[in-house]
Amino acid sequence: MLYPTIKGIQHLFPLFIIMGIQPKELSKLGYTNNIARSLAISIVNKHCKHDSKDAIKTILTDLLEYPEKYKNNEIWGKLAEHFSPTLINKQFTVYNLRNEPLNYKTYGNKFIDSLAKQQMQLAMQLPVTIAGALMPDAHAGYGLPIGGVLAVENAVIPYAVGLDIGCRMHLTIFDARTDFLKRYSHGIKEALKSFTHFGMEGGLTFSQEHEILDRAEFQSTALLKVLHGKAVRQLGTSGGGNHFVEFGELELKENNALNLPSGDYVALLSHSGSRGMGAAIAKHYSDIAREVCKLPREAQHFAWLNLDTEAGQEYWLSMNLAGDFARACHERISINLGKALGLKPIANVSNHHNFAWREEIAPGRYAIVHRKGATPAGKNQLGLIPGSMATPGYLVCGKGIDESLNSASHGAGRAMSRQKAKEQFTQSALKKMLSQAGVTLLGGSVEETPLAYKNIDRIMTAQESLVDIHGKFMPKIVRMNKE
Image (cartoon, rainbow, N blue to C red; front, top):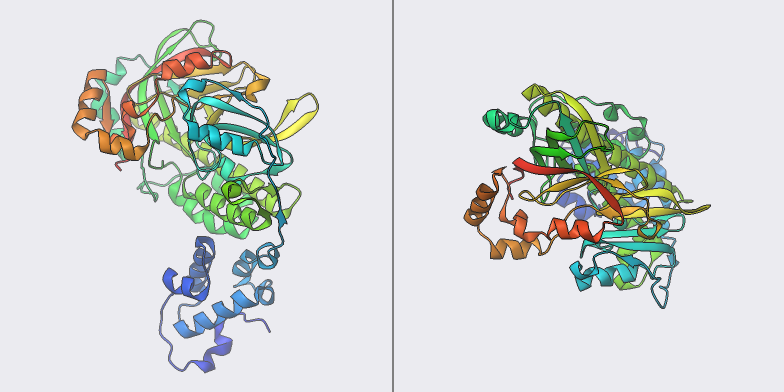
């Protein structure tokens, strides 16, 4: 029997009051992940406003036990779809690691901590691994190290992409002289305060428009349908941590790849990813991967989804949509700030660094290449490698080196953890350092002090064989989240 609404069982509950249901109550019923709870709350709030809490709990319990009964129901079908046969049947395969890791190329070995190297070696023992490389900014991460590049056979590893899917750098160059930064510093600060937002939710007080919000992919899975509202709210915003939006001076070299005259320009550099959308996708499909791909305990974060499976195809579609959403956020940030300050954009450069691509890694040999905090650096491919808020970043052009899997670092890389930086440095010391460097910081915290990062110029020297430098960017007015 299908239940089109709860009204069919109302006779069991004589008292009816308008009430919803809380996440803690759902957890007690067995709805143990955020996506299932979000779906349930959304349906209850929309369709069950006049039903008793007991009636709501009865149908939710029944759906959890017999999801197939509800899969075609117009109200409960989305929630039933979440409990797919993949999760219900828990069909899985047990895999063993290789006895020895495959060889891989390391750049800037002396700058990389031992834990990051251990994580990379473990990744190179996966049976699906084909090749790998470690960039000079590498440091320990969650699963694959930050700065790790991993090529695998016909599979995708959600945690080798990371939680912040499509995290990227975006540079907009404006038709303005660099003295604009001093003459209009107050206006720039006010624009950054009014037209950017950092943190968990949306926060912008004006409407955002972008074609990404109309994409058909948002209707292709139950999860993406739920995430569409979050995408609407968070469009044009940035996350916390090391994400930033900053104005600065860009010095372009002669014969640069942008074909712009050499000299100094006002530029806007932003760094952030796909916000809550990417995190929800990563967690959801990583849970599925760990159910179907059983690995030794120390390697469980490397669980993968075969791209021939439905779950693998769903993640691939969702990952690409999240990457496009991250790009859309940066485009809106650039448009909003440019309009607010009357600046005309003349060039843009943008690149992901938490993503997976299908690439030819040898003649006729294709693989899924994961770059966890690494910049694509194919031949003649433009990229951006920032330092810190008080040190230069670089506009680069890739050389297409096979040993690096056509990759380069995504920044200077952390020299110490956020916790250690918080314990070792003070806010007053940070302000003094930035003042001496001629940098104004809005928000931010000691966790992102330049002293917590490696020396960017040493990192660039360590990867001279991977990229050519075409421009140098110096931050001047930086906006970050206040931790």
